[in-house]
Amino acid sequence: MRLIAILIFALAILLFVSLSLGAQKIPIGSLIVGIMGRGDEINQIIIWQIRLPRSLLAILVGAGLGASGAALQGLLRNPLADPAVVGISSMASLFAAFVIYTGLVSVLPWTLFAGAMLGAGLAALFLLLLAFVRASATGLILGGVAMSAMATAATALLMNLSPNPWALSEIAYWLMGSVADRSLSDVMLAAPLILFGILILSRAGSGLDLLSLGEDTAASAGRSVSSTGKWVVIGSMLCVGVGVASAGAVGFVGLAAPHIVRPFVKFLPSRTLLPSALVGGILLLFADMASRLLSGPGTPLYLGVVTALLGAPLFLFLVWKTQKEQV
Image (tube, rainbow, N blue to C red):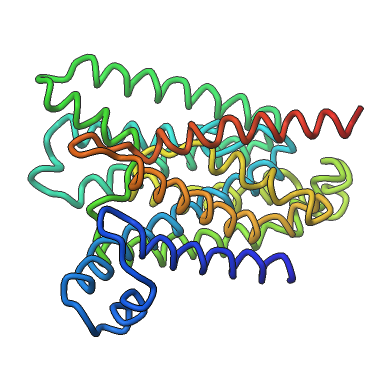
C-alpha cells in the first residue's frame, strides 16, 4: 500500500507539472486558479481544452499498457512479454491503419476507434482459442509472435500500397503515436473501457501467483494457463485496443513498467498489476511532456518515438542490473 500511495502522489505531482509546462508556461498560482475555472480565459482554455485531456489520456493509456504488460509477463512467465509480443498491439495497429488507408476515418472518425478495437478483439479471440485448447505458455507466446509478425507485415503492405503520399504519411505518423489534439470526450470514451480492463486483469492476480509456481502446481489448485489466460487476454484486449485507438502504437511502456515495479513487490505477479499501471501512467505522461517540450515549430516529436528513446536504454539498464544481481 505504501508503494501505491507513493506512486499516486508522484503521478499527481507530475500531472500538475504537465499542466504548467508547454509553449506557454503557466505559473503555479495561475494554474491553480485556472483549474478552478477562474482567472485568465486563455489559461483556462490551455488547461481544460489542450493540456488536461492529453495528460489524462496519456495516464490512462500508460496505465492500461503497464497493467497488461505485468499480467502477460505473469501469465507467460516471460519477462520479455508485452502486448506487442503477443500480437494485440500489432493487430490493433493493422486494423486502424486499414481504416486510414481506405479513407473511412475522414468520413466517419469513430471508425478508427472501432477498427483498433476490432483488431485487438480478433487477436484476443485467437489467443483465447489457444487457451481453450489448453496451449502451454510457450504455445501462447509462439502463436502471439506469429500473429504479430503477420500483422506487422500486413501493415507494411498497406503503407507500400498507399494510393498517395498523404495516405502514407497519415498512417506513418499515426503509428508513431500521439495524444495531441485530444478532447475530454476522448478521455471519457477511453476511461471506462481501460479501467474495466485493468479490473479484469486484477481478477487474474491469484491465478498468476499460482502459475509462477509452475503449471502443474497451478493445475492442482484448479488454476490452469487456460483459465487464468482468459481473463488476462480479455483485460489486455480492452486496455491495449483502447490505448492503440486513442494514442496509436506506443511501445516499451508495457515492457518496462513491470520491471521497474517487480523488485519492490517481492516479485509476486498479483502485487505487480496495480503498481505497474501507475508506473505506466507516469512513464507515458513523462514521455508526453518530453514530446511537447522537445518539439519544434512545425516538427512535432511523436510519443512513440520518445517512449522508444527513453524505454530502450531503461530496459537495457534493468536487464544489466538483473544479470549483475544474478551473478
